[in-house]
Length: 222
Ligand SMILES: N[C@@H](CCC(=O)N[C@@H](CS)C(=O)NCC(=O)O)C(=O)O
Image (tube, helix red, strand yellow):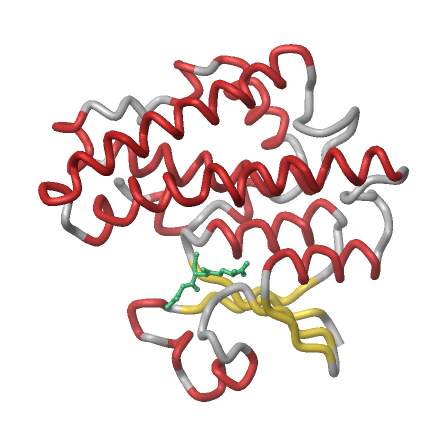
C-alpha cells in the first residue's frame, strides 16, 4: 500500500515532508487537506493527529505527525539519498542548521507573517519591524554560508536545505503582500537582497519535485 501524505497548501511543514518524499523518490498518494473547510479538525483527521495539524504520514499501520519525525522515518525507511548525513560530523552540521532555523528564525518569521496573513499589522507594526531585523540577521548568516558552499550543511543536498527552503519562500511571500508594504520590511525580494540565497534556491529547485509540491494557492496572486 502506498504511503499517504496529508498536507495543506502553503504549510512550510507539509512542504518539507513532501520534498523529503520527492527527493527520495518514494511513491506516495497526495492527500491535500482543505484548511478553509476545517478538514484538519475533522474527527478522522484528529484521530491521526490530535493536534489537528499537517503534515500527517500514513504508511500501512504506521501513522506519524511532526515533520521532523516524518522526515527521519523516511530517511530510515529509504536511506538513499541520505538526507541526515552519513558521518557523525555531517549529521551534526545538518541538525545544527535545522536547529538554527527552529530556534532563531521561526519566532521572528511567525511574528512577521501572522499579522500579514491573519490581520493586525497596524497594532503589531513595531514588533514586526523588530522581527524583520532579526530575520535579516539570520538571512545574512545563511547568505554567508552559501557564498562559499552550494548547500547549507555539507557537500550534498540535505534535510537542512529542505528545512530552510519553504520557510524562506513563505517569508518572501509575506514580504510581497500589500499589507507588508507600509512597514518597509524589505522581505519581498530575498533573492535580490541575498544573491547567494537566490542561487541556492535555484539549486534546490533542480531537485526532484519542487514544482510539483509548490503550494497550489501560491500560483494565484499573493
Ligand atoms: N510542529 C508541527 C507543526 C505543524 C504545523 O504548524 N502545521 C500547520 C500548518 S503550517 C497547521 O496544520 N496548522 C493548522 C492548525 O493549527 O489549525 C510539525 O512539525 O509538523
